[in-house]
Image (cartoon, one colour):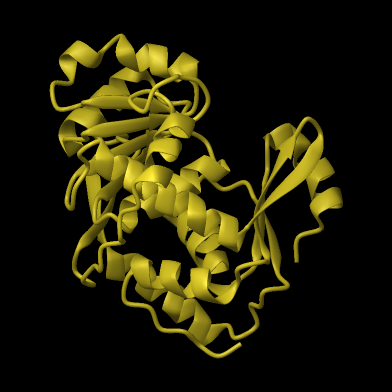
Amino acid sequence: MASEKFETLVDIYKHASASFGPRDFLGEKVDGTWRWISYARFSQMVDDLRAGLAQQGVTRGDRVAVISDNRPEWAVAAYAVYTLGAVYVPMYEAQQPKDWKYIISDSGAKVAFVANDAIGTKLEGIRDELPKLEKIVRFKGGSTPDTSYEALMKVGADTPTPLVEMQRSDLAALIYTSGTTGQPKGVMLSHFNIASNVSAVHQIFDGFTPDDRSLAFLPWAHVFGQTVELHLFYSVGASIAINDSVEKLMENLGVVRPT
């Protein structure tokens, strides 16, 4: 396919949404069966969640944290945040609550997405120490738009919100270092920092096509896994199966047959 040049992650979103509608994008194993979300469905989910976040008061420049391993909801939330003009702050499920507390506090996150009720409960336990954190939204669990991803999506579906056009220098993400030399440092990544890497791959490797398939096991909370396994494949119309555990990696390779 022709080389693409992107200035922002919003550019990538608009390109993928317009170009690859019916194709499979994200796959996850549900009760032992792989289920796929199309590009069109992903775009609708991003639009609904963006509107839901806007209804909860998230605006351009706000920080939105996430504590979760790779899953479709992680990607939906990322692009909802980018297209709202806010800043995504990813963390790992395996980190300690003290690490979450430091990163949420340092970044000034207004909303935190969490994988499930277990992580939500841990975060609620330190919420008094996080005065800027207004909402803890569970990908699985919760019951209201303040606490539930599904409920927030439903609110958004009823109140559409247009995407925000971003400039290449606008901040897209804060990705924190491991903290092995003291407290973690938040690396400030602009839209162009990430989008230009995707464009560079297009220019150097012209072989990626919509027929490619990945088995994603590198964490999207780290910039390499996120750029290569999420943004690059999204920009070419390829599909991504999300590995559910390291122990199942070999089994999943045989089923998914990534290119």
